[in-house]
Length: 437
Image (cartoon, rainbow, N blue to C red; front, side, top):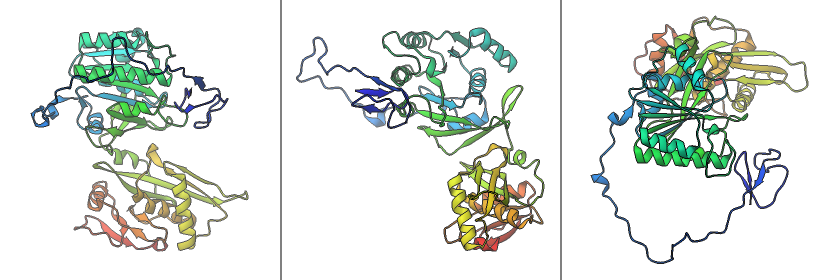
């Protein structure tokens, strides 16, 4: 059997290129022996195990969580790091993973064992000093083989074990290079078994590939308990922390940070930050999106310009390009906008990504405003999902979005015509179809 070292795909014969991930020179032979009995083992009846009544098992409560002393991180994790869990933090190089992990290690209430394979002990101490973090309860360990690390963690039993990063781990019993899918999966399995046995929380730092997926096999995400991603544009100072998997909480919460000289600092009022430098110009509108239990108001900008090529350009930053193509087709068919010879650019300010369908109406309003070179007379927030027939459909949590808009001084809102609202704190404009924009 041949296994791809990039995506862990299997093939019966060798080829120069993996048919799954299309990478060159990644297929290596996986010489697996035929299944055989262990020494002294026989096939026959085995002794049955004793099961436990579920009602007799002590229920885990909130006190079993380890607080990170950062409200944004605790929000994403569902209240903190659960004792005995394995958390995987991933992100692009230079996004701030090590900075965030150092802040967590220097703030938790308990002993921390920091296993640094990316930096030396001197460099790690300099990072803590630069970030003004307390290192009294942090112990540093060199990147020994994973078997040695597991034995050390079991002996010292810290409240939190940090491994930066999982791609640097090696093994004394497994013949594999550091960062290979086989070794990453093997090391994570040992750490997961250790966490469940000793009730020690483990925080893993993982790298991502060029396409944005976590480096190593996909099974790494299935092994761990929590997967959080640190996202953001290196050009902007804002970072978003999202949970894509959480066995102990919700996966739709988001934490907002700002990269400063003192590290990543939590942004208490993200909507006010995103709209701080907004000016009233054609093509600029305000969108209301919901992430978990929070409402974010962000600025959406659009630019419509005459195309000088045979194929018009459609570019989007912070918004799905495929959905933008669909919305432009709806505006052309249902609203009568002649966009066939126009280049259209859409940008979400602040590095925020609009993934909720409620942002459709804001994107359409921005394109219409840029096409007609007309700006809103007053600050207006847009919320609504647009269907293929041009109809504007209702969105959830409409009252909470309106309250957030009123808190920031927005005077009017454009909402779907069939949305049911209570007494609105701002002026309401109901839109039935995109042609009404």
